[in-house]
Length: 475
Image 1 (tube, rainbow, N blue to C red):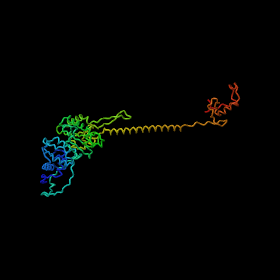
Image 2: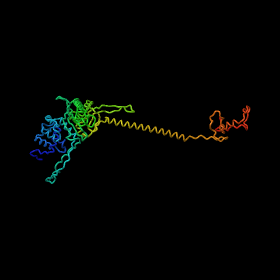
Image 3: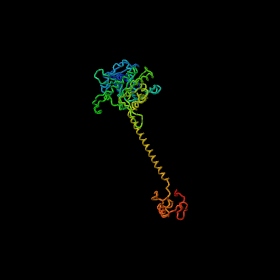
Image 4: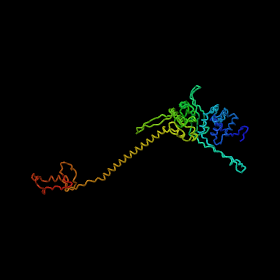
């Protein structure tokens, strides 16, 4: 495509905007990195290179060197930073520096940060509207498109989160102080993508060129920065005029317990093998244990000798490890994140969660209460069933019990043989025929018996016969 007097390299305004936005975030990058971040649907980087050359003609971009793989590196001039701020919709004061002179040494760390941002963003090729073109034919009558070799398809890019406008690189977090050499912590990249459920993510890229304790010491400075409390009048309404963490004046709340999460992306290249990289990750994990471990709070449980509790992460940094190769091959949405303390590879959502916090303890406590209520209900039901079975047994015994046989009436008066005086020791002994009253009357009118008759006599007509043997015979 031919150029014009203003833009002799023939770049389009859209691609020039892509270049300004990408360099405004990355500070220094190659044309291929700009293409993969902003317009991955382009088959090559020629259009991006032409845009960089056209912008350089107007004093917005410049090139100061080449990367170690030979690619030309581009950056922004002070005038280009102002143009990039307009393209990104940010204040010029928030753009930071222009990384002047970084390209002279190949900018290896900046290249690793760029690759991390590209992999985490996962920009998808935008669908375009095909342009109708004339189809010239060859001498044999075959269309020229059919005779030309097939253009290789653009490789698929694993999706990520956010866009170029969601990123900021080389962000400095200053600790409070009055001296010019006050301590600070510099973050390689910061992602703010609330639409993806990520209000803030801090990204550190480790090329494995520093000692393990040097890398671990950086997280101690992070924790020191997160612990600083300041008076912020803009947050006085939401916090009741109390002191608030300094980091909340920079970033919105994360919606989770603890401080903003930090993603550590290891890019060893050919410097470390797989086993050496694993050992480095384990050593950094052990050296930073105090920074990411929560505080355990234990409680006694009702009806059990075992205590239960949860971890409080209010003063802990969620620290996640991964490698650049993993996120480039599988994408940041896959299970490529190792949360310190979780002991397995997880997706980013699962890795940022705290499964041992107070929410899990409350769920377990609620389950214990439900189990206790169910146990009490079962015991009450068993007691009711035992009580009902006992009542039913007594009723069955009452039904099976036979009534006592009725006594015959008195032969003299026709009344019942039993009655008042039946237990009187002075009453006459029962004879089975007369009641006690009739027996007393009969005994009163009977003449007295002599000694000889009483000893050897037989019962006569005046003497009543002995009662027959039977169930009512006197023993």
